[in-house]
Length: 503
Ligand SMILES: [Ca+2]
Image (cartoon, rainbow, N blue to C red; front, top):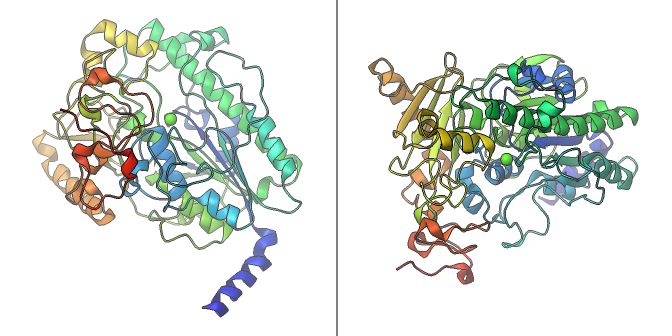
């Protein structure tokens, strides 16, 4: 064993000089069509387009979950959200046993860091992690933001500080996590900066009003802020001669923060942009239609740097696809709890399978409200925003599309219905398709060890939420505590964190 290990170290040291750098850039809440490389007409994303032109543009990339922290946990660990315990729900804890690629690269002498938003929201320290799963933070540089709602973090400045601090010849692994286009937005800032409401392609699940059009322009304006800093980073790498030796991955954690998008498994909730380049290693201007998941990012990075992936990684590398090989695969995605939006802090569990033609969603608790209970300000799984106010005011079909209870199974032919509007699951013509896809989905989930398909799915209801609680929902509402009603036999938890049962 010792001999093997020494040999490994030797090979590792010899190849260390050529080890590539990693730049991972992630926007917060951006749906797949909204870059100019995909042909969107209101967003200009020259930096994303540059990465796509230099490398590979993915037409069918999905996040591990349509929510910040579970999606980011899947990216850093290379696991599905149903394989991540507490980190599979939004804003909870992060179990220590799952290795993250930034930590593995740090242990392999990479200079590692992040700026902006890493993994979060959530508490990664509770079970013993020292650093954010995205790495050590770089945050000293601030700037005057061009609009309310845009972060004052100077992403470019922090990246330059990070680069200046690394040793000569040391490879780096940097996570650029923009806070944009997460809400809130300065209302009207997109229009104020020259974007035209009449140019907006309003998705059919939103009402076509002036307010919604302007809300979408504000979202577009914030995407451009993310892209601008990415462009600065690419320019710097080019200037210092490191651009071609850097694996650059640009994506988003989940879809646009609008009703029926973010926090939903529909197309604009879980289908995200993805472009990857690495000097001359991938053929420039390639386009991949095969469905892929950002849970595959970790294995891809291990492949590029030549480190054997840790045993905890379950999702395969994208490298064969990046190298132009034919790969047949479908993707699986899902969600559990988003905010505290239901009685007893219940989740809204769903799983989905996406092929190149169909999206099949299994809503596992169809008796629950998909966007949250109609209590308090109502439907808390939808971020507060002008578009939400519009559908609440309308109180008609658009509100129903986003908030009413859904059937257990939904099937969409995304080649004809890219916004996932027409559920075909009840159509007799698609009976076989529904049966086959459901079988494939369930078999995979069982194989993955998903608690929902292995007899202890309630474990997800037990997991703590460390963000704001809303007692108005009724039932369990203790922040940071496990719900004792749903604890499972042999579940390992901090005994001091078990909440009080609800009478
Ligand atoms: Ca997000």
